[in-house]
Amino acid sequence: MAKVALITGVTGQDGSYLSEFLLGKGYEVHGIIRRSSVDYRERIAHLEGTPHFHLHYADMGDSMSLVKLVGKVQPDEIYNLAAQSHVQVSFDAPEFTADVDAVGVLRILEAVRTNHLEKTCRIYQASTSELYGKVEEVPQNENTPFHPYSPYAVAKLYGYWIIKEYREAYNMFCCSGILFNHESERRGETFVTRKITLAAARIAQGTQECLYLGNLDSLRDWGYAKDYVECMWLILQYDKPEDFVIATGVQHTVREFATLAFHHAGIELRWEGEGVDEKGIVVAVSHQPSEVSSQKSAVRIGDIVVRVSPDFYRPTDVVNLLGDPSKAKRELGWNPQKTSFEQLVELMVKHDMQKVTREHFNLAEYLEKGIVK
Ligand code: NAP
Ligand code: GDD
Image (cartoon, rainbow, N blue to C red):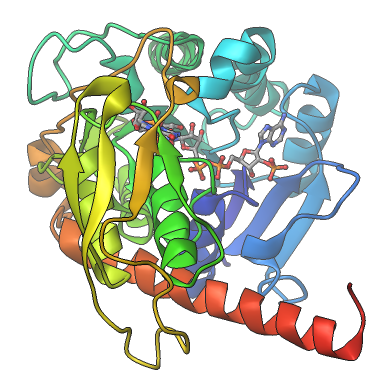
């Protein structure tokens, strides 16, 4: 019998990679989608219609929908990835964030208990390095004290503790993966890495003039999302329910990410000024290989292509995340260095250079045919 997995957040970056991973392992995969006025399921469109992949409407804010779905699907494993996952947005929508990211976890646990599946169903909770927040030690491991530093992190801290509570109170196999930032070609476009790689591609191809960023000094431990979903699965296959830090153990600033991303888009930058006056200035431009872009670079030496805008500053910002993945390496046999920082930036820029080229051609074709004026 194939194992049955239920994924909340299946349309997200991680949900899409995890679906592919579990289907590859022979699972029957069920995912939760929510109603929206536009169907935005780009990341999983290629999976829809395949025999072992099923989508169901439900919502993390709607207990009844979760109880009914868990009863219908009878999952062996639940991967609770659904969340309002944007830290800056959590300052603008703190109540919604708490409802989905904190109480939503409780709703999943109770849906399992209501359906009497607590002895058979294993639950993975998408926890986060944001719990360390205003960090109390560097690097951070499973024993580092938490100091959440945003409404998002406070909500996720509830999720972390309620998972631990149900594990101890009801002997349930439920675990948190404390994942550090992980990125990919499918990363949401307002997270800093994807915002940078898309902007670098557009600036290189002349469809954007300047990229506005917030805190350039912020340090992150960035890994590749495709590598991280394997760990979610490994955590649920482990012989005991335990929590794990998942990270690469290497950190870089936002400025370093931007410098490397522009380099892969054919633009070399130097940085001048400080704080809100800091600027990224073009010092050299090279032509892109034709498989990456068909166009010549539109920027010139001396152009300012990155500026700082206080709009992207946060009321409290987490600035020094560096994970220690020793436990995952030792206990799960996971390789934290499978994809390096340099490879990650390169693959994201390469993807976005091609995406921007396609956008440009589509627009040119439409204009030629008189479809848009
Ligand atoms: P993401 O791309 O933003 O995806 C979030 C998913 O949650 C989407 O499928 C979204 O559905 C769904 N969702 C949001 N509100 C919902 C609701 N009320 N009901 C049902 N579904 C809802 O996030 P991600 O990067 O894949 O991250 C996955 C999880 O890991 C999140 O819990 C995030 O907080 C956590 N995490 C991420 C990272 C990281 O670096 N990526 C690191 C640590 C932890 P729609 O498509 O309909 O919006
Ligand atoms: N989004 C964004 N936009 N962030 C910026 C910008 C900008 O223009 N400029 C600088 N930053 C800085 C932020 O202040 C933050 O310190 C850092 O870049 C990373 O921001 P994000 O990419 O938005 O990610 P995050 O670290 O806040 O949150 C992500 O990682 C968490 C794990 O640590 C999300 O995926 C969370 O869901 C996840 O839990």
